[in-house]
Image: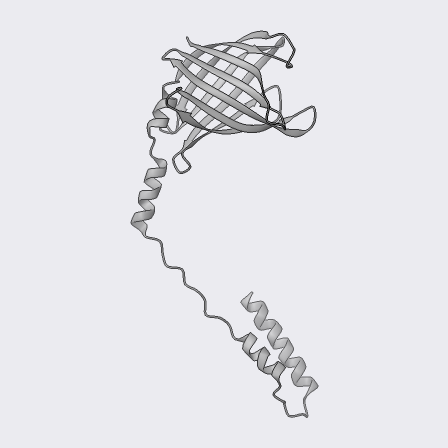
Length: 217
């Protein structure tokens, strides 16, 4: 930007010089204003960040805590019993799946692989869960072989109910628009987990469309 400004100023001065070659330059209000405008403001120098404070902040951000220990308690293989509803008035349908959950990157993230059969078709899904120390919230992602989208949800853990409530959105393939979702993940006991999924209408009505009971294998 500075070089461009200098170049334009030089061209402008050459043009004025050629035009008024035999005339005395006259100082006017406009030239005074131009001179004032052409004066560059001194550059603001940013003070360097405190390196010790920055190091402490990153250490706190990268260090696994209690939420990560809670995620690590899910490690292992699970047998899933699924109940899902294709519509509000539709009868429930059943399916089974297996799930393999691991912690990665020094216990910072949880990844899960689900395999089974859904509506007569082989099913595979992948999940990731993180706990962000900076925002104090869980972040969950989900992909599977029955779509090409990515579901992203965020939530908080409630100690009283031992459950994490996630909210987020995914694209409805029927409309091409995003739809809101809610997931409630409950620690029933050391060897049992329950996951409930809800669709949320534009009016805020919640409709349960799936429930999974997970039993440690």
